[in-house]
Structure formats: C-alpha cells, structure tokens
Image 1 (cartoon, rainbow, N blue to C red):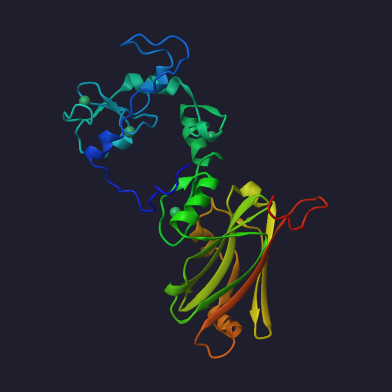
Image 2: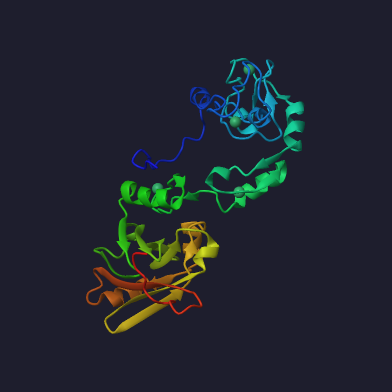
Length: 313
Ligand SMILES: [Zn+2]
Ligand SMILES: [Zn+2]
Ligand SMILES: [Zn+2]
Ligand SMILES: [Zn+2]
C-alpha cells in the first residue's frame, strides 16, 4: 500500500455537500465472470448494493432515509447534507424508506472487514456489534503526539510511522536509549517520543514521555504491541532506568495498540519515574534530564526457545 500519500491530519468533521457527492461510487462492474447484467436490470446480488449508501458507500442501517424522488441515503449522511438530497439536490425532508429497512433487517451480511480476512456473517444488527470488536478491523495509528487519524493494517502503519512521523526503527529485542532534555522543568518538551522495534517477526512501540501528575512532571516509558491483545500476551518486556548508583526496573506485558496511548499512560502501566528520581538518575546538577533506559522484549512460550533473542525472523 502507498503510504507517502497519507497525510496525518484530522479529517474534517462536517463534510459539505460537494465533498459528499464526490464519494459516490458506481456499482462495481462484473469482470469477465458470467453474463453481463442486462442494462437497467440489477442482478440478484445487488440487494447488497441497494443497501449501500450511494453517498458514503457504507451499508445502510435503519433508519434509512430517502428524498421525495426516492434517492436513499444513510442516517449519518443525512445529518451531514444540510437537508438537501445529494443526488437530486431537492429538499430532503424527513422520509424513511421502510421497505428498504425491512429488506435490510432480513439479510445476513458479511462483516465489513471481510476484505481484510474476517469470515463472519451476521444478521443485520449483530453485524454492527461485531464490527466494533472485530479482530480484523484496522488499527489506529499509534503515534501519540498528534491526534493522527490514519488507520490500517500493521505493515501499513509501520511504513506510515517511518515515513510520515519520522519514527526511529530498530531491529532486535534489546535496546538502550538515552533521553536527554535540557530543561527538565518543562513537561512539554519531553512528550511523545516513540521508537519502533522489530523482533520475533512483530512490531513494538516504545513510548517515552513526560506528563504532569499533580504539580510535578512524571516520566514514563512503556511498550505497546502492534497487534491485538491476545497476541500481546505472548510477550513480556522489561525496562530499566538508572544511574548514580540507583536503578529502577519494570517488567510487564506489552499492551496492544488497540488500547489507546492515553489509556495506557493514565493507568500507569509501565515504568513511571518521578521527576526527583529522574533528576537523581541524571546525576549532577538537576539542570538536565539524562535518562538511560535499557530494555528487553521476550516471548512467553512454554518451549525451549522462550526467552531466546530471535532477531530478524
Ligand atoms: Zn451514507
Ligand atoms: Zn433526491
Ligand atoms: Zn469481522
Ligand atoms: Zn499517524
């Protein structure tokens, strides 16, 4: 997948009508399979296509709306088009399309992530529930510095982190990082540092950041696994920070990037370093923050290979 074209900006909230209509897409043309459909007559499979919102192309769920001329659209789109039908530009009004709603409820539909590998098929309403938790749903960009709206599969997100967020990439399951900040009293300048590690054939995000806890800044390092929770449990990691004859160690299970960065941070599920201690580790004059964080990732498996650093799988 191309990643250079992805801009890491938030999507505009209120789509205007111009933008909305451009997203309309024509019914897919059958390619070389079977007889071409008769002009003007929809083939049987197009029940699903009928239920595709002509504006945003998502499946439509009750309530399904229509304009006076019978153009349908989903309720999300309806709330965005300022009461004007995106197809014919007539006033939209408040007309439900009950017939289509009934058809919708009678159908069993594939999960909307079927193209990403999900084999599940559901009746209408359970489909919605499933999709919110589907293991095949794309991941959000794990970069924490901005509210990045990019979503995708892991390899795509790795490329996106490298190319668009200029994140450092490392191969191997041990690391040794130095975080140096000249003004340790400012919280902001230490926020949002992310490094990506590749080991055991998987990607991990090491976050290091500062945030305010009460009146004092706190530094925190933690690892997130680029994959789902079940897989994350197969791994453990340790982080160690020290200096000046002192040492602080953390051992834990990486969290999945399904768990938002803020959620992990606020639960303190990682190596938390109080500022005073951080300055102590930095040695010297309390004018500079100099932390050396070392760490290791290993696989939790009841097999003889467990704990062995298997690089470049
Ligand atoms: Zn729509
Ligand atoms: Zn219309
Ligand atoms: Zn699914
Ligand atoms: Zn991003």
